[in-house]
Length: 162
Image (tube, rainbow, N blue to C red; front, top):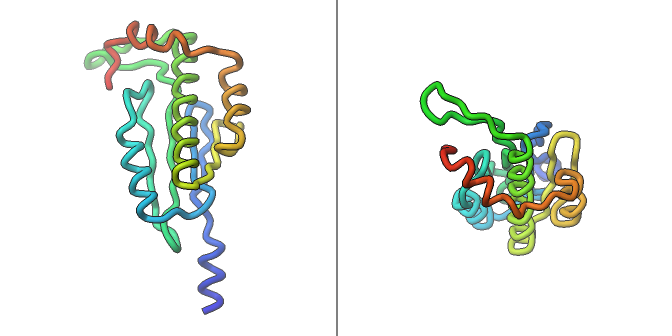
């Protein structure tokens, strides 16, 4: 019995991928089934993602569930019609990537507060924790950018698939 408890207590959460265009996140501990279900549902209901939806998966773990997910930040280009592609201006993509990052970190911070969950995050070589290091992560990625023009960028790319 002690061996089973030790093996389950040492169960590691899923690994975070190293991709400089995708914010990866995972809960730092096991969460209840009901909390995991609510978080997955809320992630699926997030509004109009720029480069892709906020994904959250909840694999089973001893005593509950792990949570792992990601948010793609940059669109780069997209298909407007079969075989026709439109490139996104780098400054526009950076503005929207910053807005997407801030939104994702805000959602993670809200879940942290409501469900008592702490998050490990990774964006390429940048690693951090939410909610403790949100400002450092934002500053490192956005470097003084404002997202005031995000709505104008969305209008400029209104043919973007959703």
